Image 1 (cartoon, rainbow, N blue to C red):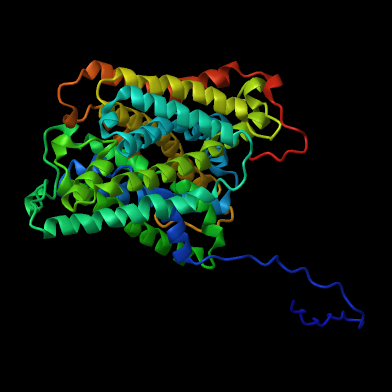
Image 2 (spheres, rainbow, N blue to C red):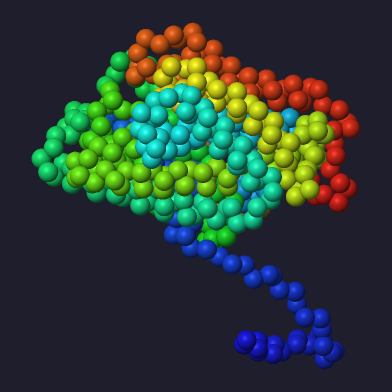
Length: 490
């Protein structure tokens, strides 16, 4: 071990030794490239690829537009907030608007996972079917069983406070995203190179989606969910040496990498699988199965399926306890949830919240068994997830403008350029996506519009607004259970 050199001790005017000056704690900085890669790993995924492959070449347009009007504003605005106020979205909205709205924001951040897990595990069920029996991919009963088994197994693992689970996320990027994605694109190019005709037209007149009314653009809503979560990566802005210059660079690089990971596999799927045969949950495996068949290598299909399943389950475990932990801490300090939901098990894990969440998830999983088309169920739950999350983003954009005006001199490590304009664009895009989600997509044909609206509105507005309103109205002083030594987030 190197011994640090002895520093000279400063003398005061009388020649006596003065107290050594206080030095700032050495901070470990990260490069803007590293931050870009961290952001890419947390956002990019192959799961939405089948959804956009339906559009073929127009998927490029449908990925780029949400990136410009949602991903970029979210990244820059949340970076300013994270560099000035600790405590996450609850503290941002609480100080910018009010504590009740702060609770609503953090509730939506938690509640979106209630519908996110069924859609994620619906993808797992369809992928796993290709490992066992591809005919199971369209079975609602199979999907419901897999969702329930995987979720409750995840609760069992997480409730024991298992350490090291978070490491699964970084490995999941390589195992379940980069390797399968690159392989899919390479084989797709080889598929076309053999003289096979693309299943989707690849001509310039198909760069824009065909207009068949508002319903023809509904699938774009799913891309807002694909890009969500940027506010969590913004906490790393203070780890950059020159945040004002380096953070925008990191976000533009991350956006380019995310677009490549999203667009290229979606195009590869559209080359191989016709849109009218594409499953929104099993589309990735459909493409692998078809392209492996063209190269007489279908024995590789189960291997890719296992890789995708392992990555998805790892991602679920890393997310399972996170949002509920934030909700628990705030509820203990402010009394937003009844004490029974605030109890910790012997491992210090908020098991009761996860169990309550699991009961709702089980009911949602059973819907797969009763909704005839698995793809329709997957889409509905994805829309509800997006809409609940978008409520939080609407609050965040408004709070950012209010904080810039009410606390202009508050120290910030980063100031977003044209903040009001960025928040205006992000708010308008989020609101438009939320409203468009209530329109059934044209790809679903003549399905019962009333049932669709009832399920989506009931899920998004009921869980996103009504439930937190009831918790807030029914709260009691005795619900505040935080220990005196616990430091408040706000």
